[in-house]
Length: 98
Image 1 (tube, helix red, strand yellow):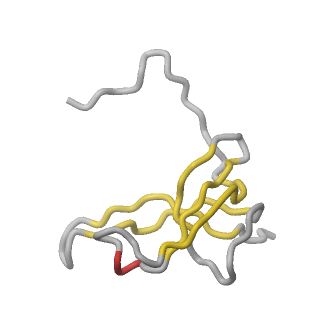
Image 2 (cartoon, one colour):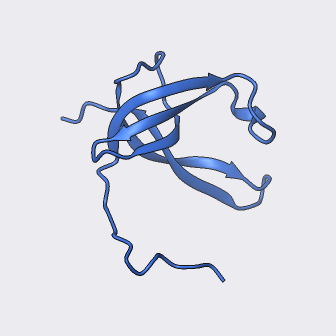
Image 3 (cartoon, helix red, strand yellow):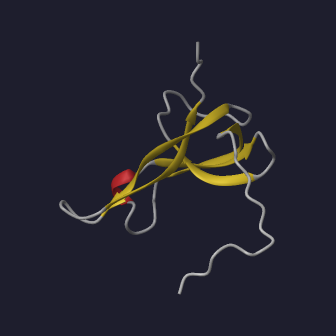
């Protein structure tokens, strides 16, 4: 049985934007992630305050601490060529919306 949220849990909606607090690039990833190497992991401080661990994606240049980023949905992994595809969140440099 999968437990539900605690009875006193508060639901919070996040905007999905923040800034890079810290980051590192993995050139020797753990087993199962070799096909994504090299990739960059970051701590992102959301505009609402919490820190989240995430992979950075769509990088054109090297990230910098303080860079603004936004959440996007991306493929995390798949179960073979015809198996289930698992999606999740990653963060990319904030696009200048007009």
